[in-house]
Structure formats: C-alpha cells, structure tokens
Image (cartoon, rainbow, N blue to C red):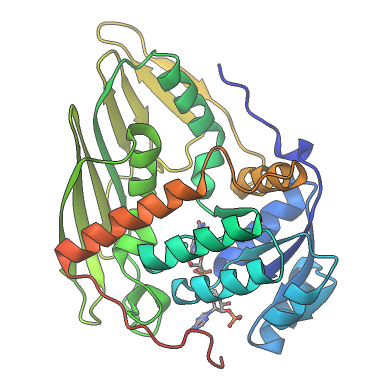
Length: 339
Ligand SMILES: NC(=O)c1ccc[n+]([C@@H]2O[C@H](COP(=O)([O-])OP(=O)(O)OC[C@H]3O[C@@H](n4cnc5c(N)ncnc54)[C@H](OP(=O)(O)O)[C@@H]3O)[C@@H](O)[C@H]2O)c1
C-alpha cells in the first residue's frame, strides 16, 4: 500500500486565481474545504465577475489580472482561463515572479509550451500543469504497484474521455479561437495518463471527426511502444464508457467509471480473487494538486517530481503530432482582448 499524503498537511500558501470561471469555482471550493491554503485574490477581465467570485468564495481582493500579479501577498497563482490565453498569462505571472499552476492544456501547442518552460527555468520559478488527476490517491497507489513490479510489464491500455456537450458555437468547447475541441479538452487526460504509466510513445496514429465549427468532435489516437499499445479516445459528442482497463503481463487493472478520479481500483491476477483498493477523497479531488504545489513551492522546488515540466511539454508534443495527422488547427487571435 502506497503512502498517500494528506492535503491538510501541506503548508498553507496565499493563492491568487486568474479567470473566475467554472473550474476556478470548483477548485476554490476544494481549497476552502479540504486544504490549509488561502485564496486571497481573484483577477478577471471583468470587474463584475471578479467581485461576484470574491463574494461567493469569501476572497478579500478582486481586481484585474495585473493587480493580482502585482500583489506582494500572493504566493502562487492559479490560471484557469481558456486555453488560448494560457501562454500570455503564464508569461506575465512568471515575469511578475509568481509560481504558477496552469490549467490544461498549458498552451495551444508545443512551441508555446517550450517557451514557457524555458522562461520558468531561466527565472528559477515553480511552474506546473494543473493535471489534477496525477495527484489523486489512486494514481499514487497505481504507480506504487507498477514500480514494485506487481503488474508485470504493461502491454495494453484503452483510455477514453467522452461525454456530450450541448452544441453551442459560442462556448469555449466548440471554439477554434479559444482552443476548444475534444483533443485539448478531453484527450489530454487519456494522453497524460498513458504517458504517466507507459512513457513517451515511439509512434502515433490518429484520426478525428470535426464539428461544423471546425473543432474536433471525436479523436482517437493509437500510442505505440515497442511492446505495448495504448489507445486514447476523446469526444465532445458521444458518451464513452470511462471505465478503463490496463493490461500488465501479471495483472489486469480496472479503474471504474469515472476512471480519472476513482476512489477504487481492482487488481486481477489470472485465476485469483480480485484485490480491491479503496480510498475516498475529502472533496472533489483538486485538493491534492493544490497541496502538491504548496509543498513544492514551500520546499523551493521549481517543478513537481510527479509531473515535471518536461513531461507536460512532451505531452504537448504528442498533441501536436495528433493535431498534425488529423488536421486540427486553431485561430490564433490576440487572446486577452476586452471581455
Ligand atoms: N482541471 C479540470 O478538471 C478542468 C475542467 C474544466 C476546464 N479546465 C480547464 O480550465 C480552463 C477554463 O475552463 P472553464 O470551463 O472554467 O472555462 P470558462 O468558465 O468558460 O472560462 C474561464 C475563464 O476564462 C476567461 N475567458 C472566457 N472566455 C474568454 C475569451 N473569449 N477570451 C479570453 N478569456 C476568456 C474568463 O475569465 P475572465 O473572467 O477574466 O474574462 C473566464 O472566467 C480551460 O483551460 C480548461 O481546459 C480544467
């Protein structure tokens, strides 16, 4: 059994959130209810949105992005805006000397990701992709069982992230200019999970189907390794099982629906009883990534050992390769225009 760090044990930092949208609210709730972290500032392009969020989550300061980055009492910044703005906002935050937790996908492409990674290294400032699922208890247990040899050698995985979004050409999911589409919104989870367990693939084969707005509605990628195959499926127009099996030479592992945040794992050796592992979370699970950031920043680290920056950049390279094969492109406009 792996040792699962308790998010309440991480040192309390003072957080500034940029982009008071849907996911920022969920993360704020986890922060308040399941960590010792403090949310001290929120920034938005709109004063009303910043104020409304501050009121709802009891945040003492609401202002512009720049005002949050200027605040000396902000120890770390969480950027939760749409994908098209990530490169610019993270650059501003790092230039302001703030450690950064940046929502997925960290950028629109690998070139932007390389630039951000270089900037963080040059400045010696902590930078991490908000791939929250990496830090959940089941992943700690899974990596422990894999590294201790219990699963044998991994040969197979089929990992899907598909659910329907109501068709809305104005929403970020359906927008080419906001970096929408199935691959960047959903496919990043299967790809990141596969890279975590299998490493970088030796080759990739991918196909997409598109919406009328030009984003990918459905993308399937085969990530090939010398002795293993893993498929990543992403969809915004169909529900997929979200029930994942991983095949090792000695064991089959099941992560039941929703596989990215299960509280239960099933380990099955041929001809033996199933071994069930369970670990409930206190809140929705984002508390684990917040605690990871707090621990790393307090220890003076520039990256998380569980999700190094080079791996996030490598994942963007995989997404670039898939996009190239499938013809997935974005409209690059000036991202931080008025609301
Ligand atoms: N970790 C997870 O589980 C998870 C889940 C969902 C989404 N995400 C990621 O989190 C990010 C935000 O997703 P969300 O669903 O929370 O988005 P959202 O609610 O639609 O928007 C979040 C914020 O982005 C800014 N924004 C919206 N439209 C914009 C535009 N046209 N141009 C520039 N900025 C714009 C707004 O900030 P202002 O108020 O400052 O304008 C808004 O508050 C995305 O990168 C997404 O991939 C992560």
